[in-house]
Length: 308
Image (cartoon, rainbow, N blue to C red; front, side):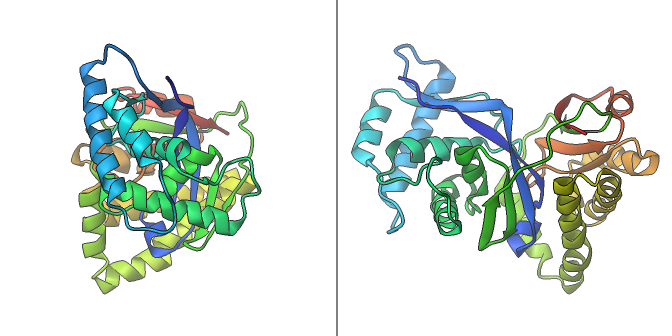
């Protein structure tokens, strides 16, 4: 038995801002994927995943909601039969490992599920997001539901606000010099403590003012530039966003990368931003010259996401 594949995701823009209702843009990242699977001779990793699925199943049994019903008997039976989530998506890296798992469980076990093939109205998208938020809260304490939504639909998603989300097209990749890339911090991050730090910062009036006047406006501008192919303007706004994050989100940037972050801003070889909640995992990079960025960051592992 092997289920359909569900892919990783990258939140290109909108980390933390979407908690406060700014725009966000998430894209599928097909380099990493996962599927539900059963084998007769499971590895230790498979056994660990199976145990986690059993705990997740228990959580779903206690979920008090009218939004969705699951065939939990079938899920329990499959878990007892050794089912696990076979995934190449790195955990704690900000690319949606739990989102892909949630999407795969919904896809297989939800009764009367909303499918990708039907007319995806705004109401259906919001309902899916709400269901996924409830499901993924098992992993993170609090989830927006966007990661599983992106993985389930396998489409770029534009978040205009909490109540306005839509599938979107992104400009097709070009064979240009510019690129979006992932920089591996080689340490994992946990979402919940990072979000808690952010929520504590939100109690400070100065931080709230900065978020609304700088962080959100640069994020929104980056999304508009990216979707409309305004590359020159995009890099100016990404640089400003990178500066704001370095100044105000330092706890979310692994300490070993503060200097590299600053170096990118000063040399203009690349600009870094958070990928998900931060604290470890991947850092997202933007550059107008990928070869130059690779040379500047030769001591680090990079992965190409998108070419301009």
